[in-house]
Length: 211
Image (cartoon, rainbow, N blue to C red; front, side):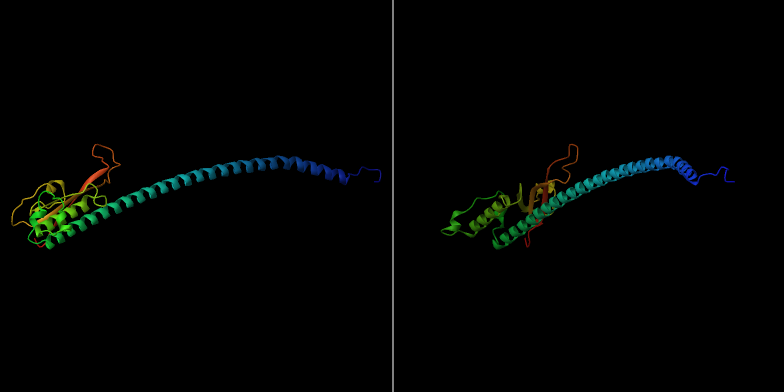
């Protein structure tokens, strides 16, 4: 028994570790390669997400800018229409203040009357000077852009368009009206085609009471 061969524990252990190492080594390399591939896929997917987010952000900013410009344009148009209405009612007040001389306000725009500011003037001259000052306010730098007005008697052509602006029936029984026109930015200025224009003409018709 003493002379027989005995297996050495140390040599068996070393052999086992070598076998285990030979088995585990390929699995470890496979795991590293898989981890690197997964990391590359994740990194690429994140880059795509960033690019999509940037595109969405840019589209959102452009849309907000377009809405802001549209709101500014609409606000300006609303301000011009309010100014036109105020001018029309101001003229109505001037004609009532110059009762009996409403004919001065119809026809060609008159010049100023210097006598109204120095030696005095007649009621007709006062009406003429009031009308002159009103038209200066209408067409001045603070007035309506491209503004103009027609005061006449009309009961039929009361639409806010180019046809009614240039037409009056001038009947004695028809009421006095003031027809205003001015230029404003066109909402279709960016559209393609022959009808696209940067400026359009707006019209307003206001009856003058109690005439």
